[in-house]
Length: 362
Image (cartoon, rainbow, N blue to C red; front, side, top):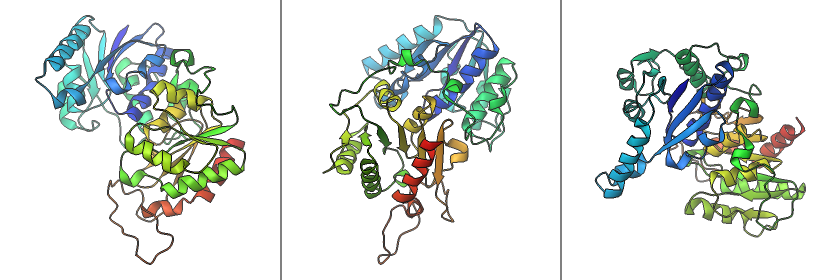
């Protein structure tokens, strides 16, 4: 059986789909998947043994120059790759208008979420077969339910346990092949000694999801005192500058060179653990079985937190999780310490370090 999956972005959403691929491969021996995904995340599906072809798209880039010769050429190449196979089933696992539009270009019966289940209800009108998947559950569980409904198999027991995924999934649930990643046994080339270390995943999107820089510096100090080194990856100039400020004046805190996703994966699997804000790389750590402590302020870990060998600390401020990209609260000028966003004042470095120690001991 040959199935096309359309799940283009974001990094966390792509990783959330991997357990469903694993479920299907176990339930339906011989099933093979092709996967349409944004070019920035095309490395990830290729790491799963059940994925045969990855079909990168560049909608984000193409939209900026829709009539450019390069855009037209790349679009024709994508269409040719899509037309080369007639699929037994095409599954839009994203439920957006853009993903439904892409899925309709493929040849095969088209499945997706019904209008009450899709993030953009109008997308459901594109599908020949619509499936109900209730809201109010973790994103990983929802996509696993969609795959099971579309492909006609029973969900495994670990897909219907705790909705937040705490301790209910491990690296085997994601099914990634470390040999495909190239992370197995890979040593870092930063010149640091091979001593126990943490990776701090400090970069994220919304301003309100950022843990304060001073907190990262204090946490790095606690790690160094305990005999660990710290690695700081980055993906943009802004993140690199933040990493350099966190590392400033601290021997044993290394700002990594710019890495591919496979390079970040190699750093993660070599680490004792990681600390992450609400970011796609935190989900990558979970998919690799790396002990991860994730910090949540305005977002809800019950719906989008990482599944796997991890622990979550969420703010208990009365307004959290607010799901806002801009915090409506303002800390009074005389308040000390001044923390922005205020919800992270409930997650100071000492509390995070204590939780990280519990996670490693567990």
